[in-house]
Length: 250
Image (cartoon, rainbow, N blue to C red; front, side, top):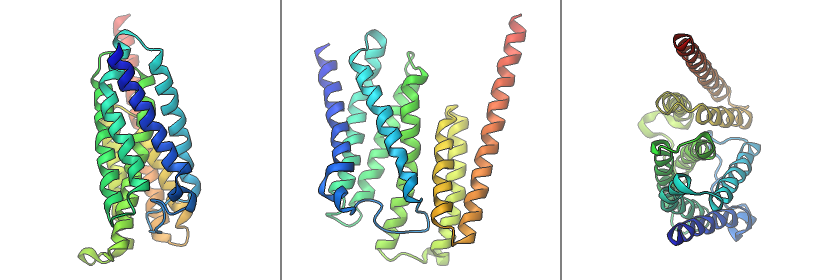
């Protein structure tokens, strides 16, 4: 029990570090953060408000941990180290990432990898419930988009605008479709409808921000339609399968 409280308290401290880095650190107050460089894969500022929802969900998840017991507490204990690592790396990508060019991208990618471990452990645990997965479906989805955004920012910083003679506009359209396929693949493999919905939110934000670029707007719209159609088909088949199983039991 003592080990659990130590690990969970560290998780809470790591989460507080992310909140401080996002809202109270000198970097965040100056606006000199991971969204500083404009690219064509840049969502509108309002889209980043989803961080507020994510932080609230994670806060509820953490508070619930102190009230947990038995198998539920074991799940919190198993995910605590990876969550703490992910949170610290995410905070560092905001505060210390500007110290060395490209370091913020490396830290955020590492944070995403640790976050994936949290998600995997939750899915594999026999006590797995929707309550445990939902916060990290949102978190993982938006961090995935943030990683793509920050990679584009690094391309801009290092002057890589014509890789393979495609150009930023071409790569933006390619990554919009690639991201849509990633969201759909994740949904089908993990049976998670929230992850692709986060991509739709992000892509709408990109279309709004880049409304002067018709190619980006149309590609983002097509990607949203593709994700939405795949989601509706998935839900229909899932409900149809559940109905058939219910009929067989009768």
